[in-house]
Amino acid sequence: ADVGVAGARSGDKGGDANVGVWVRTDEAWRWLAHELTVDLFRQLLPETADLPVTRDILPNLRALNFTVHGLLGEGVAAQARFDPQAKALGEWLRSRHADIPEALL
Image (tube, rainbow, N blue to C red):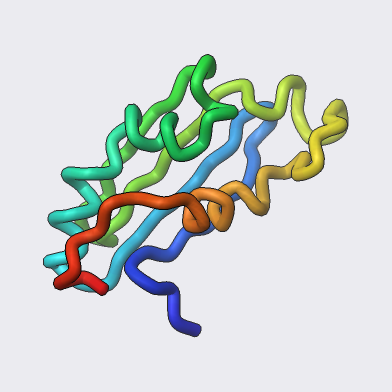
C-alpha cells in the first residue's frame, strides 16, 4: 500500500502512547528528521500540548518514534477515550497538514 511521504504506526504501553513515523528514501529522511520536531508534533496533535513528549531518532530505519507520556491516563483498562489504545494516533498524525517539499511528493 502507498504510504505517501511518510508511514505511521501507533499504539500504547500503559498510560503512554507511541507514534512511529518512517520514510523510504534518504532525501525524505533528511526532511523528516529536520522538520518533525517535538514542537511540530505538538502542533499537529494538539491533545499532546500539555503532556511530556519524547522523540527518539532511529536513522538506520529512517524513522522517528514519539512517546506521549500520560496520554492514556492510567492505561487502556481505565480509559474512556475514543481510541483507548492509541491505535489511530499515527493515522491522525498523517491526516494533519504540514509543509512538504514538492520533490518528496
